[in-house]
Amino acid sequence: MSLIVMKFGGSSVGTPERMQRVAKRILDRQQEGNNIVVVVSAMGDTTDDLIDQSKGLNPNPPAREMDMLMTVGEQISIALLSMTIHQLGGNAKSFTGWQAGMKTNEVHGKAKITDIDPSRIFKALEAGNVAVVAGFQGMSEDGEITTLGRGGSDTTAVALAAAVKADVCEIYTDVDGVYSTDPRVVKNARKLNEISYDEMLELANLGAAVLHPRAVEYAKHNNVKLVVRSSFTQNEGTSVKEDAVMEQGVVVRGIAFDKNVARISIMGVEDVPGVLANVFGALAQNVIDVDIIVQSGVQDGKADFSFTLSGDDREKAIEVIEGIRSAVPYRETTSESGLVKVSIVGAGMVSNPGVAAQMFSAISTLGVSIKMVSTSEIKCSCVIAADQLNDVVRTLHTAYGLDTSEQAFVGGPSDRR
Image (cartoon, rainbow, N blue to C red):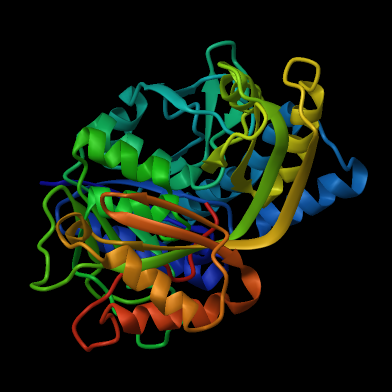
């Protein structure tokens, strides 16, 4: 008997018909002799509808109250799915995140899991139930309801899989697996049979929406086997594991992109120790994630530097920087939105020189200017204007031989949480 964690996103349970299909699939796996733990997101557009309602009443709602509101969607899903399983002749018991033992820190909207007590899950399984758990949520030590932010249901599923020592964690979404790039942009993008944790983590961090980075980190740290597969077909998915098989001659495994990028530049900063620590320390204290950082040369004792961040955090970041101007004097700040980050990823890049140069050359053939660059052993990212994103992705896909009939990688449409 195997213990399987199955996670279903919002589109997978978005209608009564889809809910019934998911319930039948769960029961089929249980009837094969498996113990089943299910993690579910809010149905369809429920979360977006709740956000719209809240903003209609208060454009800047308190984070605590938003968490109270946002957890409702998952609670609806787990109750309805459990009812559906019962209607089909099975047994199920639903649990909110806190009932399932998900303990978090106290950061509303972006909480992190600190501990899990799966005792109630085990009791439900021992009684022959499918344990249906609300993703995306938990409870802090002082009893506050929290949410885990984007990708929170993926993280819930992987964390639970680690806690109950599941044999596999299956992430069901609206694509067949991990693709060489977004199939909506490149029609001949292909599905990978396997991918390594490190490659998947880079792709997730770089904008591929199939899995959330925190979920991949959790899986790598706890050696949880992940399988990404479609909730709408019986096709084999993509396995994410430590040692994935590499195709011979493959250097770049796939192309990811992030459409929501902004750049902030701070000019005329004193070139003294501690400046960067003060700026990025203040941003970190306000839970603002920074990505690429570039500092220009020093002239007359002054330096300029730029960094990228999520477009959603641009205005808040500018406020933070203005708030520390007395501690970090500068001449001026500028910001730019409407940017995207395009990235190539592949474990084979580490031993193949010239991969980045090929990327720059391919982009230049389209007359596109590269604004910022970031590299690591297995990735290279370029920040560009958004208007030619699709042409750049298609050109890179061809340039690295990903159009042939045997390869694939990441980034199809996916569930929100």
